[in-house]
Image (cartoon, rainbow, N blue to C red; front, side, top):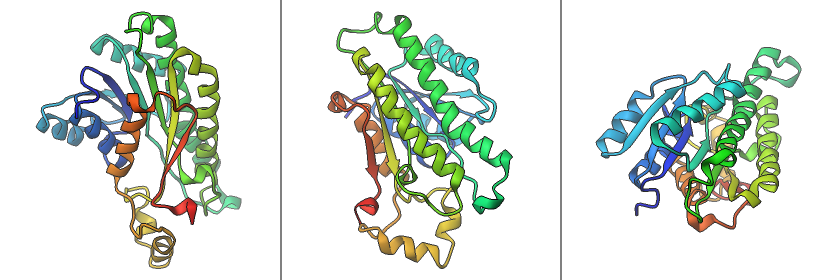
Length: 258
């Protein structure tokens, strides 16, 4: 399948894990992928090149990215590719501390990267679309935004109050933007990953108590793979999801149903 041939896709945080899987998933299906992050994502670039795919890195420090910086990222993408069809807000961090000891610096950093940056990028890409991108597109074209939420958009978690706050807020922002922009042919949805085997979850997978407890609750009986999330993002970015707006799609092996 080449669902995204001639499409331009922005993915944040593509150097590894879920972001890399998302970027390569779109690349395999013909997209011109722009990976946004603090590094050049050289490994992802090499893997995309091996696929014969188009991939380009745009460097941005999410710890400092503001509204102007987000607009600059979108402008650079449009300058290089002529348009934006899909934005995937994947980049995120997690900090673990007891709530009573949670450092202010860590709280602010988590909120900046997990909530502020996705919102600023949504603003920027929607601003381009409403400011002329839509008129320059075909009559049936849509702008599609997918935010990466979390199971902790619905649950409290343990030792991660900032992460929980940011992901709960991101799910809410997804719904708010969908309400405002759906009439503009902009689809805003989210994917809420379950327990996925990434660097962020390494401490849990290496914990001799938490790891078996987590696996015992997942009906699938396994940790998810980054590719499980990539497929969901591609679905939400495709024409098959035209009538989905404001949805938060749980991809968790059945965890929330348990």
